[in-house]
Image 1 (cartoon, rainbow, N blue to C red):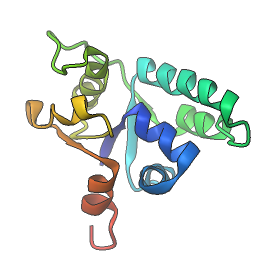
Image 2: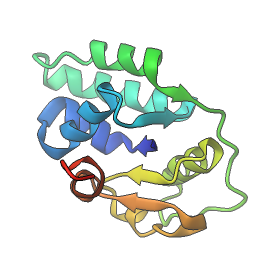
Image 3: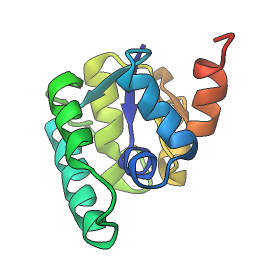
Length: 137
């Protein structure tokens, strides 16, 4: 299953663990296919660099290298008009649509409110884990 992971879930999983980490772990072990665009990758890198200054014990380089090597990079076609109340979130929708991904995992309320746009499923990491990563899924 192709999945777009919002920056907040990606970073939270690396730095703070919990359910966001379970989503990353599923990707790392091949249970889901992470798709992203160059713009999303840059946001992952920039946000990780900023947090690394405050949380130096966390090793982000390995995660970013894993993304670079194993994630599917797509050239996302921009949306014809803004969909989210926060236009910065449109890049995740554009990436999902361009990659043929049906699921976006996020903790962002503005992005969650866009669920159903062009049949996209937009879930929190907890809802994603319950629906797709539990033993019976």
